[in-house]
Length: 220
Image (cartoon, rainbow, N blue to C red; front, side):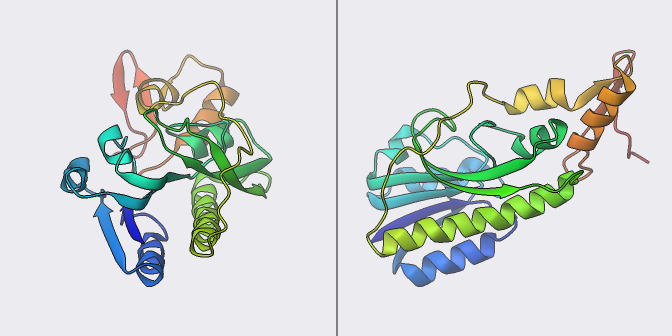
């Protein structure tokens, strides 16, 4: 069986995912998109695959690659169906969600819109931090990946719709320009919720906007 795995090697559990794929299938192509999406160009001209897996890939995969797959193109989304797109962890923290899930779904020409066939659901502790939610969801995402992979290996994968995507698509542009850019005019409690749900020094969030000038609260 020929497998293509598109993955960000810098993310949590990525090494485990790659190791499991290589142990399970002899013919594997690993595409690392941790730096940029240019690596995807190397597989656009390759012959077909039986399965294509996208694991924490931040880029849209073009139809010309998806059409090369004999069976299924499967994406592993680190959030629940209600939050398709970018920033799923952050919105869950902001909305004080009590439950969360990771999502396995088929890929098509639109981001996070293909048939959802398996979920990994779990309860969230009260006042869970953004950092802890990211770590926990990545742990659960790997569990979901293993479950789907073992079904494929045992020829027991059933693609049956189990949930539907939320109507609102969460884009990175919206997250950067609206959700994680905070203006001081807003209510203090709302400000605190936004701050707690977006604070990520490594990613550069949030941004404080004062008199049309932007500042990062952790800059020296």
